[in-house]
Length: 123
View 1 (cartoon, helix red, strand yellow):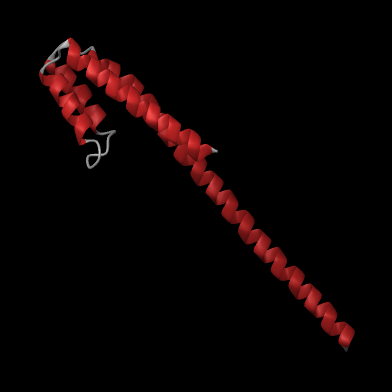
View 2 (cartoon, rainbow, N blue to C red; view 1 turned 135 degrees about the vertical axis):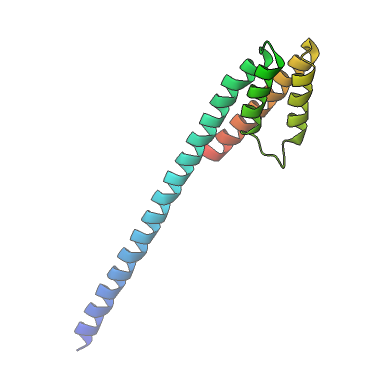
């Protein structure tokens, strides 16, 4: 009888270990997939800003600049990026060299910070 109890305990322990291992593996895989997806989306976001900002600063007329402005604003957080929005709006209404340089410098900083954040998250 004692041998049967020990065998049962061993089998139950092995079963519990297998279930726990499967749960941990599935959790790890789902975290990796989610992490990879977020990193890819943020890379696309950075690439899209790299495409749109030069179009904004080289826009020849106000209507064209407003179109690119709208495209940029749709990529920003309206609750956190209001200073960037102001800077872009100022450039749209007054497309001077100084405002253009300020917009470019601002987005260089935004892209650099996001890249640094992505590197930290990926490690």
